[in-house]
Structure formats: C-alpha cells, structure tokens
Length: 431
Image (cartoon, rainbow, N blue to C red):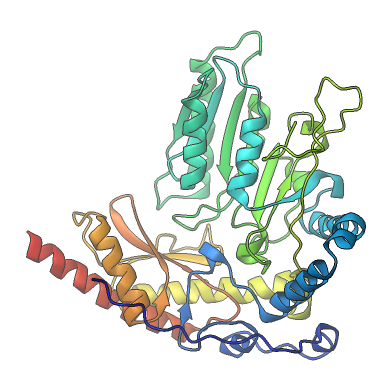
C-alpha cells in the first residue's frame, strides 16, 4: 500500500487584487522576492518551468475575475463580448511575434495546434513527412499515426545528437532534405514534403537555428511546420513575417505566464487555404465546396499575461535575467555534480540549461529508476528539474525563471546527488 503524498502548503490568492493599482507600484526584484506574486509552496524549488509554466497571482486574479464575469451571464458574454476579447488577445500576441492579427488564432496547446495543421493536409501516396529523433513525443506520434494511415505518407527522421554546433545542425538538416528529395524523385512536383522543426527542443533544452532550417525548406520546396512550444516568452524578437515559416505554434502557458492551456497558432495568409477546419470541427464550419467559404473559425482561450510582463520590465529584461542565471547556474550545477554541460559555450543557450547527471549510461531508464528519481526529488527534497537520457548520458534540464536564484541550484544539486546515489545503489543490488 502506497503512503499518502505529503501535504502541499497552499498559498491563497489575495481576496482583493486591484490590478490597476498594483501595476502603478514597482514590481518585486527578480529572484526569491518574486515568490510573493507566485502561488508556490514556500518550500518548493521549481527549476521545471519549461514543462508546465508558472502562473503569476496577478494573472490568476485577472482570469478569475473574467471567469466570474462569464458565469454571471454566459449568454451576454459569449454572444456580445467574446469576439472583442478574442480580437484583443490575437492583436497583442500577433504584434509580439511579428505577424498580422488575421494570421493568429489561440488553441489549447502546441500539440493541438500541430495536429490541427498536420491533419488538414490532404495527403497522397508518395508524400513525405519529416520529423526528428528529438521531436516532442506527441508530435512524433502524430507523424507516426499519419504514416500508419491511408494513403500512408512516407515518414523520414533526421537525427540530431548533442553536444553539437548550430553550423553542424544546419548542414545535417540540409543534407537530410537533399537525400529525401533525391530518394523521392518528384519531376512533376506533385508530392508534398512536410518538415516539422523544433525552434527550441524540449529534451535537451537547446535553441535550434530554426530560421536557417526554414530557409532550407523554402529553397527545396518543403513545407516547414515549427514546433515553437518553448519560444514565445523565451525567444526574443520573433519576427515570423521575416522568418516566413509555413506554420508556427507556441505555448503561451510555458514562458509567457498565461494560464494553462493556451497556445498561439500562426498560419500565414498564403497557407490559410490548407487549414479547412480546426479540431474539433465547429458548427460554423463551411465546406470548401461552398461559395461562401472563408476559412476556419477559432475558439479563443483568454489570458492576461502581457500586462504583467510589461509591469515587471518587459521581454528583454526578463530574458536577460533568466538567461544569465541559466548559464551561471548550469556551470555551478555541473561543478557540484562533477559532470559537464551539454552546451558549455552557450551557442544554443536559452532559459534552459542541460547538465550531465552522475548516472552511468548502462543503468537503463526503467520505470523503477525513473520513479525513484522523481520521488526523491519531489517527496524528500520538494524540488524538481526535468531529467532524461540522450546520446549515451543521463541529463537534467533546469528551466530558469524570474523567481529563481543561484541558491536554487544548490538545492537541486543536493537532491540529484541523493537521487543518483540511490539509483546506483538500486542497480548494484539488482546486478
């Protein structure tokens, strides 16, 4: 019989949160002082923002206020006010990513957006879907599903192994695209070639030269679909009108402080004819056979995070702090663990840093081992950072936010040293 989980110390949301007055006052300093405007258990060390995001209390208060307004009169809000809120959200997000408002819709999450795009293509035999060995799990499975479904488009996988360099990634990708096109001769240009590209990989957490990869696709006649799950709020000065991907999706609840789940799907006007229906298909769907077809309709999940980000200093100030701390914290953690950094020169730096764990590769990632690490981190140390296996080593991915300080890396170092020792003891006992 499993023991009950230890209690979590809840931080109640303030009963009265006047956002107008709050945003007239100076914000807390970055670091642990920021804890006062997040709802964390006071003893919890969170170095895993990249997985689920972190909801600031002012944003939560705004969302709760909006929920109260909706529930007071659902008919009035949904029939009269919703469109105005939708347009306002789309306009502000579009400006942030360098797109037109009419090229952006809000969806539940990046996986939902990517599946919407992929399933709106009309595939034929001989079409090719291109993914990577480091693609996010649900994205890889969506590509595999389409390859398993009539008319069975070919699935091709390009491999990225880290450590490496941005230049090597570009050349590896260019060569893969060249081979795919060569092996699937298309003299009449009737086949579709579609590549799904990460902007920032989830595991390991590194920034890819995705804009250069998009250019390679464009030159080769390949559709580019960008999995930007970690981009918005972390990648500065995104200009999609300049980068010109064919599709781009990013979670707003990871790094932008929106309430879960919320993502923006960018579909440039030149490709909007491809997206015939969102998922699920709404009552407002129009068949492409109809004379009045105007493209898909969307349903928007509202969020109030952009005002908060402006209040605490804006995109550049936020990311200057988090990126610097990620680099410093990664070096410190590698020293504490006696291991190495995945990207020691910071060539693909983001607000996530990847540090080798002191676990031998021959210890496989069984469910027992995975759970032992998880339980040690969460139940004993009340701290967490993502851990994974890649290219012959175990790693942790630490995600840095404005509420973190270098001392948090001390806590996660102690937690991982404890967890890794337990894993090695378990392996020795079972050998």
